[in-house]
Image (cartoon, rainbow, N blue to C red; front, side):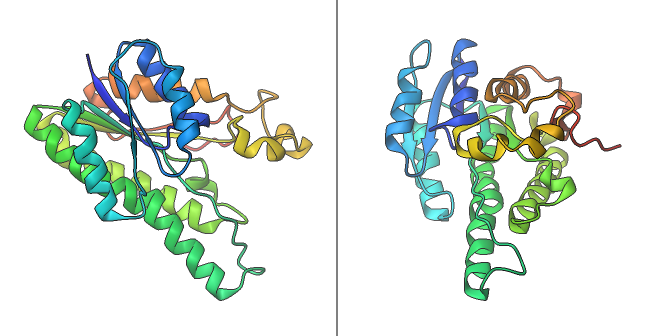
Length: 244
């Protein structure tokens, strides 16, 4: 039974990823930072058995190590899904400097450094185990920018580059790394935004992606993707942003 650690699993995309993995027969460890009730609800909804919850602030390197050791003590971790992220608004012409620097520190510490530090522990363990997979949830913002949250876009672009670096470094040890890059996703956190007609007008499908669609791709990377896909950045944005 594969053991998968999923960060940011208390709601939205994270809980959907956990549900798909559990339905595929995985034992899932769900990470959360602050939303304990959400994590418990996500845990209770999972099919199968062998699931657990861990807590940790991904902006704190010491908490990351503690959380990794707690999760991996249950069973060796075969796949890591770096899903957790923050998105504080900080438009450059309307944000005080103190708020600007705080937004950059927090966003990079969680979205990029947190994923990198957790992947450090995963990569070392998986290399010793003879293989594994690291899947990171990025965003189309990495390619098109974010008007009111430039640190978010920068963190996701960095996550893409970091993942590709991992893919090169770890391929000889049979540890494979992938990026899933969604656009808008219909989660509770962005419900107000995706009701905006301008957002829907930008979607060739006439709707934004569902969390389950992102989860299906993440689970494919964590369990099924061929080794030759390592380093791939997979767009899941309904053709709302196309790149070549």
